Every structure is written in structure tokens, then in C-alpha cells.
Image (cartoon, rainbow, N blue to C red; front, side, top):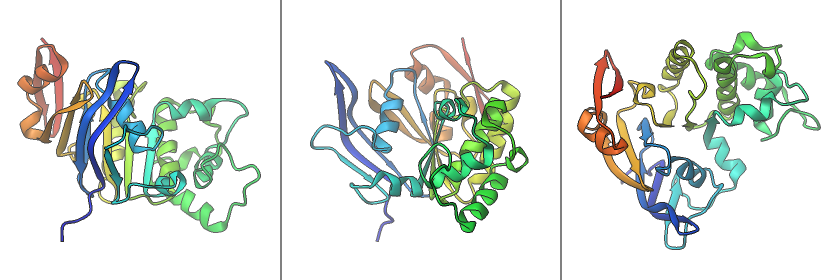
Length: 260
């Protein structure tokens, strides 16, 4: 019997005004299939993320199943699929100040902070474990607003990991990181690939981890191409995707693009 896909999306369309944000998009991602979803601005990446996280719903006739189920309580879904995005950081930088450990523990309650919530010893233990797993254990005691962008992203990953999710959805997680911080952050993500399925949404091929062998190319709200990384991350396919001449180079297991 075939394994149940992590994501199974068929014929998903979403319209704003006269514009199709998604146009009959179909996509399947298996458990353990580390995947990079790649596309230019306006290709539908952000809309796809909101579709997966149940922030938006498709037009009638679509099939959107996550871990085999079409209907989810959002809180339950977050326990199976952690979400990390650059936009989330803004919520935790604002006043009143929020300490790192409290930020991570608050992941159990889908809240900002732990006020009015009963924090158990098990939650504290799992939060400590998640911080160590994300390489952020040394940050406990500091306010989120004092962290560098890279440090804050690692804390947000720890916050997502407290549920011990089966998958992490990373929505442009390297936005705002300088090159050195980006590489350190990506190397940290590689450690998670052994236990958690990673799905990364990006428009930079330099951010695609060596462990990510499955590539999905989005353009105009549709899957333009989907398949093996070695076959798709070529100058020809990326030129087609971005509409400009792209030259691709490899350095070890990493890919790099240059606009000609």
C-alpha cells in the first residue's frame, strides 16, 4: 500500500480580482522528501504557503490534503508541521520584551509569551531540548529584540520544534541574513534533516540544502517543472523560470546562480 503523502494538492486555484494567484496547481511531497519550492516574486509561493497553513482556502473543486487529511484544526496541524518565516520575527521583536525561553515555550500555546498559561515540567524540558537542537541554547536569558537576525531565526525554529513535528515549512527563512549568517543558519538546518522533513520556499538557489533533492519550480501560480535537483537546477531551466539568462555553478554540494 502506497505511503500517504505529506502534501497532496490537486487543481488548487485562488483568485484575487481578475488575477489567478494559483492556477490549477497540483503538487505532491512525500514524507522524508526534502523539497525546495523555487520561483520568482509573484509566482505564487506566498499564496501556496498560506494554502498549506490554512490561512487561505482554494476555490471549489480543489483537493488539499496534509498528512492524508483535508480537514484540520490549525492548532493540531501546527503540532505536525512547524512553520518558520522571516515575517514571524516581527511579532517577537515588538514590545513588551519577550525572553528567548518564553518565546520557545509559547509555541505550545500558539501565543506570544506564556502569560496566563500553565507551563508544565515536560514543556520546559522539551523547550530546552528544542533550543539545543536548533543551536540556540546559549541564547536563553536574552530578550528577542537583542538578538541578531540569524539568532532569532534559530529561536523560532526551536519554537516550532517543541511539538517534535514531522515536517518544517520554511518560508524564505534566510531573508535579512548576511552571507556569513546565512551559511551558519543553513548548516544548522542540515542537522534537522535527519529527523524532520524540510520544505523550503525560496527564490535563491544558494539556499537549497544539499539534502534537498526534490525541486518544485513555480511560475504564474502553476508548477512549471518538478523533479530531481540535478536535472532542474540548470541554466536552461532557471532561465525559463526567472525570465533572464542564468548561469549555474556548483561548489561541493551547493548550487550558485549568476545572472549573465
